[in-house]
Image (cartoon, rainbow, N blue to C red; front, side, top):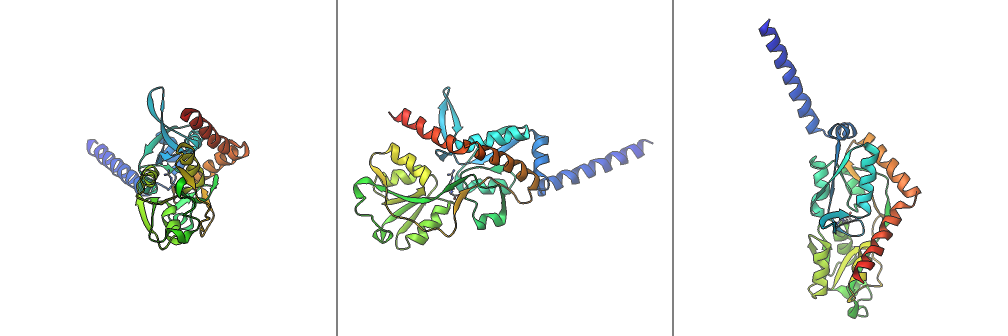
Length: 271
Ligand code: ARG
């Protein structure tokens, strides 16, 4: 009798082990259910990307805020779970979703064809394009892509701006830095002559730095640049829930107003 119980217990334990092993190896099998069971949604992001995600002091505490943070909170609400932000450098954000360290990534991520092969993406929520920031005093020197021959260009490591810089400015030296802020500092100190960033982010830096300006040069890109939420491959149900939230936010014009609110706030604080 005792033996039977023990065997049963062991079998039950063994199958539990297989179940959990199964769960971790293919966390995408039903990511929505897993998140609801956990009661938390872990979101990977690189918070050096105002107006989408950046750190600021709220009641004296370092807090991540911005349009992507609001989107994450709305998704958490839809799923009925708590949202946790896991912050890291941008070149680790997608990998965190792949390894299961984060459930989703919201970080101004452009849903490129290449990335779509590896991750599921929600519907896009913001259209963007890359621009070149230069020192204001050098605006007349840098009038086309050829004027950057043998010059240095800063970009963010792991971002599509690395590729865009390489293909548009093939005769320039491309310097990849971990954070956009580092690239901006190098531009201000003259170590690089241009920085490729997306327009919404570039506008923020230019508004705060009198010595910088956006060059009148258009950069070509193979595909349209639009941001989406990244999830593990096979996240059908989760994707449906995320798309519902994005659809609602877009219909209410909320995403643009989140972005606008950040600009207005930062103008107030820099006055
Ligand atoms: N949209 C670009 C990309 O997906 C840059 C995103 C950078 N995001 C960030 N939070 N630093 O490659």
